[in-house]
Length: 251
Image (cartoon, rainbow, N blue to C red; front, top):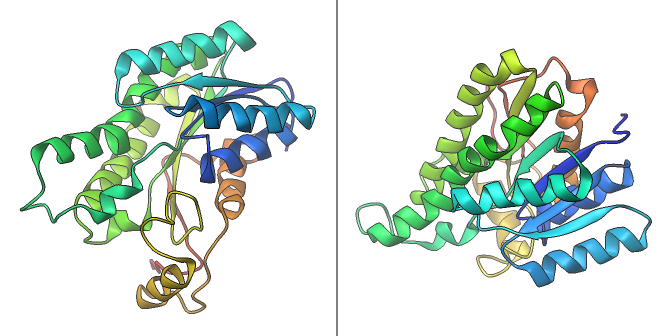
């Protein structure tokens, strides 16, 4: 996989899967904009990457704000001169703990949809002009196997990510910009710890149909996303990939 002289923006990159994406891509020579609303945590990821010899920039971004997304792209271009890839990873896992749709407050509904779903469009709209200048690029969005389940607002927001991914892949193909999404199953990240323990994750995975009850580390998910960004995946477009240890079976 050759990523020579490439630049990526990873949102929600201060921890979990976003940090794993940042590390893995940096190890392959990509300059990384570590974008997160928590700038202090983002800077700690940048320090780790630069100490290992990579190039990285911490960027504070509120992905629920179109203007903040544009500023994130502008800061990345100012630092590295271009953008080749985007990983839309930011999201609110806390949405899984919110009341069912008939009881959720409109403020919570709008906040979750803004961060989990609308942000994919906001960041894509902000970065597309830069990708076009480079003659194309690739985008990977973070969905969830919850998008095919009935878990309330979280499911609704991630189902929206699936639809956005497919529609953006179709509309951006003429610009040589590929768009795919990954739908993780149970993943041991910092964001999941307030929701359930690793043991509870394993039990939930088995209950959802996974034979092994395995809980993935964030790197196992990010490795698939890195492949989808690469030239080796040049003919892969508009797809939603479950990365869940066999939880979701589709024939």
